[in-house]
Length: 388
Image 1 (spheres, rainbow, N blue to C red):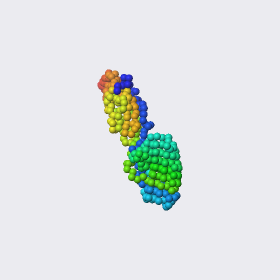
Image 2 (tube, helix red, strand yellow):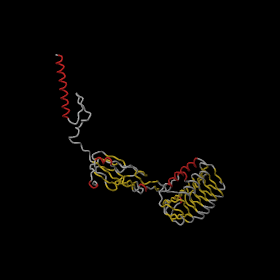
Image 3 (cartoon, rainbow, N blue to C red):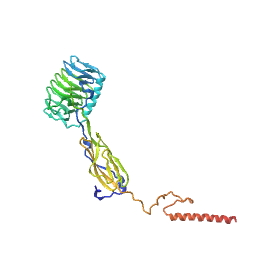
Image 4 (cartoon, one colour):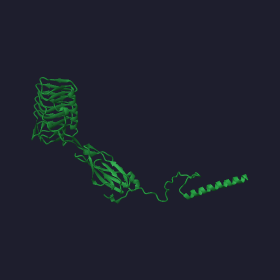
């Protein structure tokens, strides 16, 4: 691209100018996605996992492990039946809690497909991430997808599943891949038929005769049961997903340059995996190139002027990060003409004999040397006559 308007910047201005940030279209819209189900780690085998207590009333049936950590209060077993292992304040439960925290944070950090939701009754939802403040279900919810499809629900505060509410999976959708991240506490009311793994920051309560195909996991509080059937999903074959974050350019605007002078600046970005860099529109100044894998702009500018280029950082997760810069390249410095100081002649240079500083005129310096010599000769003559 030729210099804008054919302008050639003055040298003084060029050292103040820089690659000026004109726009950054996608920095505020970076997205975090996952390409599979949430990785529960060692929490996966648990039907119930609590932190402060696990309490049961009535003949609940729990198909999966039951765990508690770090507290010790487990009550109501029996009459509850555990078709699995009870891990009461042991190392297994402690590790499961640690893995639950990791999974909870991953789910909470994902960018929703749809936000601002409340009551999900009547909805038929495709796979994706859905968020709201107080999520609720008072009637029927349908989840339609394949065995690999994933649904993640984010409730900023509470989750309330009403009495008799029902979640239905169709077209091969699997309970293995349904997750509910809850910012405070979850309640599954009487007779509800619930599907999915609840990851509550505080507590989970299942009221009388509610059934759960999934897991009830509480990070800091209690899990309270009452004549429930809870079945942890088994035979889950879809590999846990990898979290990916779209890029945001993080480096400052690079400096200006000068014709014929080596130039180097690295453009950096956040996001996972690492980004590659290209010039999306416009062009860098002649003589400069952008290395795709490292983001390094380098070379020797050859032509003064002002140039505009849009840099794109991409890592396969949308949106790409784009930022537009304006770069001013100054002309090479011009040596001063004959009226200026001679090379190597500084203001502090002195005549060896006289000690006089050499100024701007070499003629004056020569005259001074001759005068000094004459003075020395006259003094010698006078001394000779005085002796005679």
